[in-house]
Each structure stands twice: as structure tokens, then as C-alpha cells.
Length: 331
Image (tube, rainbow, N blue to C red; front, side, top):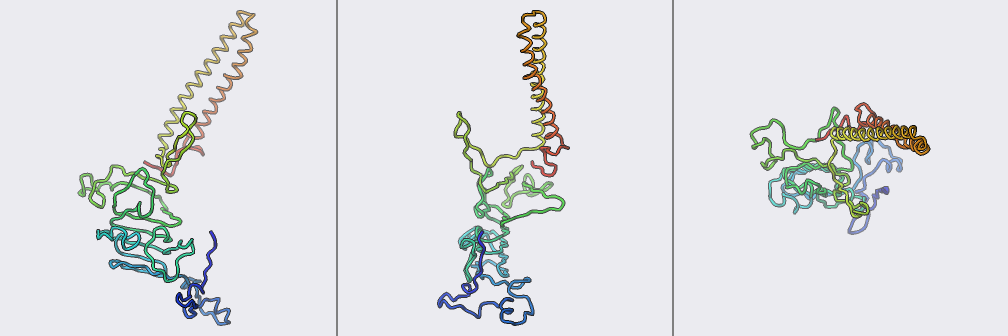
């Protein structure tokens, strides 16, 4: 990303006359040092002093209470993802909302940020970071989230968190849970309901979508199926079930290898016996026995050893490459 330069002269230029309003330019520590004046305290942004930056004006609605400091805001109002005409608040629907946002229009003008005195609304794409808590909202639409296998969700209460980087940290563990509370009675026939009083699914789904893309990806599937496709969003494999599956597959492979090994040994013994009884045939059977030993019996035996090592490396819970996570589980 190109480095941003802060131009104080353009920032405090009068739009009508084009003149620089010197009286509005904050004096920085560097200005005082250059003028050979004492610097008694930190100013100009350093040491958490007021930073010279463009000042935006939030176009607050009549029902909103706004708490702000610099470009940090807490807006108490109704569902409003954009202008005053947006969201359920614009329809007069009860949708109490808390919008915590910093850096309004931070990525506007190709990342240069907002202009000084700019009148702004909420912008879920251009604002730097936010936590959005609403009684009634459409999170997927407001945040531009791919539909996924869950499909288009009906408006419900929601919490949206967006920033360049998001971390959820639990010193003694983190749980991501879908569904209602356990042991709750009296709200519906099955316990807890959604915010509109509707019954919950027995096990609401969880989707982890990297890249915000759930569309099908086209691939070449061979001569018989040249136009094949792969779903970007797929179910997560359960580790213990996968381990059991591979263990049973390992048993099948063991049976096949044992049969091949027994067949090769029996064939070698049979051909050897024929060659010893019918001496003229020994010229044919002896080389065949050698070939079976070199190209069948020995490779099958080596494959059985590899299979044993494969089981130990991937299916043993003490192995470094054990396929099941010891820290992350999913339903």
C-alpha cells in the first residue's frame, strides 16, 4: 500500500477563496522547535495528544444519541447501515441498535481518507472498524456476506464485527456455539426461542467462509467428465470418524495384501514342485519363481511394512502427524 502523506495546507484551505486559513492550522512540536520556541508539552499527536487529521461530520438521525471523540463514535439509535433511508429504522420498525465505529470513511478516495468537514453516514465498506449490535437487522446484506449453505437469513437480532484484523482470545478456551441454551424452559415448546419468538433448529449450522466466496469452482474432471466442479464451501470432516474410516480401510488393505502374499508364495511353491518332478520344465519354472519372488512377494511385503508405518504416523494419537486435533473439535 502506498504511503499516505498528510498535507496540512490543503486540509485547511478555504474552499471558496482557495486561501490557506493559517489560524486553523494546529501548531505542532516541530513548528515550535523550528521557531526556536520552547516545547513545554507534547502536542501535535505525539504522546496521545490531539492528532491533526481531517474532521468528519456524522449525519445523525433524530432518534440517535451520538457519543464521539475525534473519529471514534458510539451511536445509540435504530438499525441504520447507511443513510437515514436505510435499515429497519427507516421503516419505523423497532430495531434498537448500538453502533461502535472508529475511522469513518477511512478507505475513501483510494485509501487517502475523508476530506475535512465531510458529511458522512455509516459505511460498512469504508469505515475502519466497527461492532454493530442490533435488535433487528440483516447482517448478511449489511456486511456483504456470501449466502453459503445457510441461505438467505430472515432479519433477526444480530451482532456484526468487522475490521482489518479480528481476534477472539480466551486464555482458557474459546467456544463458538450455535443453537439455544441448555436447560431453559418456558419460552417455547422446546425452550429458548429466537428474538422474534420463533422456534430454533435443533442444531443451527456454523459456516467458516474464507475469502467470502461460496460459489462452485470449475475444474477438469477427466475425459468422461471434462466440466466438473468443486464446491468452495464443504462440510468439515470429523476427526474420530475419519480415523475409524481409515482404520477399516487399513484392514481391507491388509486382507488384500495378505491374499496377494499367500497367492505368490503358493504359486512359487507349486511351480517349484512341478519343476522338481518334471525336470525339463525347471528351465521355465525356475525363472518364473524368481520373478514372482522379486516382483510380487518382496514388493507386497514392503507394502505391508509401509502400511504399518502409515498407521503409526497418522492414526496413533501419540504420533506427531496424528490426523485428529487435540485442541479443536466440531460437531
